[in-house]
Image 1 (cartoon, rainbow, N blue to C red):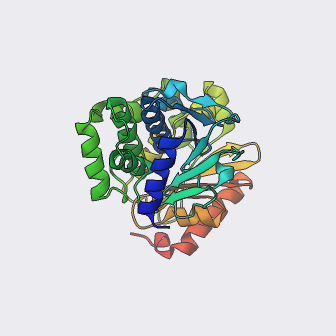
Image 2: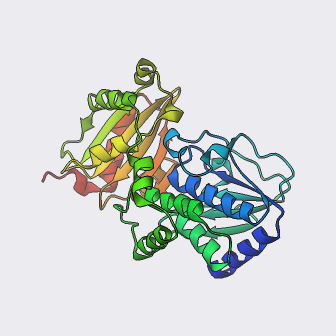
Length: 325
C-alpha cells in the first residue's frame, strides 16, 4: 500500500474514532513528545477523547511544551477505539500492548517494523513531526498555535536545531509554515536548548573528566556514572544530556561522540555523528537503532570492555576514522 493511501486511511480512521490513545517510544524525546501532543490537541479540538500514555516519564525540559503536563504515565487502559504508536519502531519499544484496539504505527526509522493494523513508515523523513504536520494539514484537522509549537519543537529536536543532515528543504519549509501558524522559534529554542539546571553543569564537569579519545581523536567517549547522579542528587529520567553531546560534537577533529550511561547491568550508549559516519548502522550492529547522525544501543560489558569493543567496531566499520589528520 502506497504512503499516500496509508496516510488517507489513517486520517479517515482517526476522524471516525471516538477515543484515541497515543504512545511514544521508551525514553521519549522531543520529536515523539511534540508530535504526540500535537495530535492529541488536534483530536481534542474535534471533540474526541484523546490522551497520551507513556511508560517512561516526560523529560524535564519537554514539560514546558503546550499540554505536556497532561501526559499520563503508565499502560494504556482498555476501552480506546484506536491506539497510535508514535515513532516506536517495534511494539516492544513502546512498553505497551496492542489490546483489542485498532492500531496505527507512524515512524521514520529505517529499521521500523510494521506491527500495527496501519503502518505509515517513511525513512527519508526528518521527523515524525514532519509527517503529522502533513497528516493534519492535508486532511483538514483542527490546527492552532499550540499544535504548531509542538510540531515545530518536534522537527527542531530531530534535526538537531536544523544542523543535522536530515535538515531537508521540506523540513525547513514545514518549519517556516509552522512559524507562520504561531510557533515561536526563540521560545522553542529556549525550551529545548536553554533550560538546564545548575546541577547539570556540575555533571558536565564530571563527564569531561572521563573523556577518552581514539588515536586519531576522531572518536570521543564520555561516561555518565551512577555515582555522579547520586553526588548531585539528580535522576537519570530528569536529565537532558543532549547539550553535553553537542559540546563534544563541536570539537574540531571529532566525528563521532559516544556517551556511556551506566546502568545496573551495563551501559546505555548514545551516539552522535558530525558527518560521514552513520551511527545508526553502528547502533544496529549492537542491537539498537536510530538515524545516521543520532542513535543508541545497550551493551552489557564492563567499562573498559565496552569502550574497547565500541571503538574497535567503529574503526572496523569506518576505517578512515583511524587515520590522523
